[in-house]
Length: 308
Image (cartoon, rainbow, N blue to C red; front, side, top):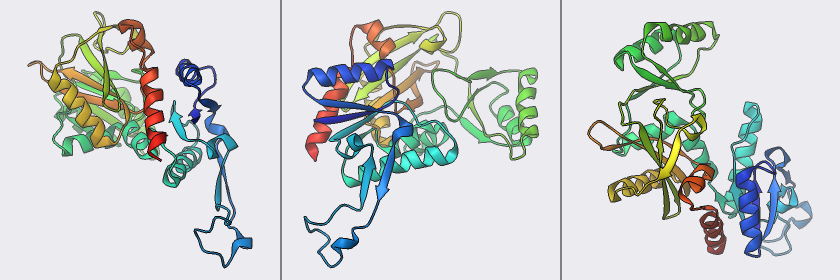
């Protein structure tokens, strides 16, 4: 198999996928987001031939050549840059997928999962339990949202990971900077507020690779946030069957093949879906459990490539 990994050379997950795939006899190329491109040139010399003629050159070729020749593409990381660069990069992956090259995860799944509002709205519409969530942009709307959530809300960036930018706003003093930022922004400030869920100091990350599941409990004794990146500790976790079913249903609804589903028990012990990560990390999971999902990810790419 000719496998392309889109990400940063030298990054832990990219290096692990590269090593495991090569050990299984695959040809692996690592491509950075900024290297992606395409060449669009209708075959004028082929005018008059049947569209399916083997002599006809394809009107679109992807760059670099390794991407064009890939049997499967694994995405590690999200595209950074200005709006036009992000749109272009996702469009390139979308066109590649339309041509029939498996992209893991698909561009549509990436776009949906990274947008916390869009993903939770779709889950709630399907009957999945999620925390009450309000998005607003102007100071009056933000204040009303905070008050309607009982004056105790978790504010998150719409796009973010590893706990970055997550704050609990449980007082007027903490609310005022949010309102000031929205008032100072000429076009408003997109603000995502979620009800604070009292919990026992831990949550669960269920990592799905197709139907294969790996699980981790993340526990913090000093912070209500349980992200490993913020100092929480990881430990092996055997999720109840209902939690696994919920994670699988959640990933399927969003079309995410390799998914990190974060579940939080409420006061009654029943799980809520906090969010879904379409570029999930598993370094902490591997360290805490001794299980490395990398092989499962490469096997899944093999399976998807074989479908073509």
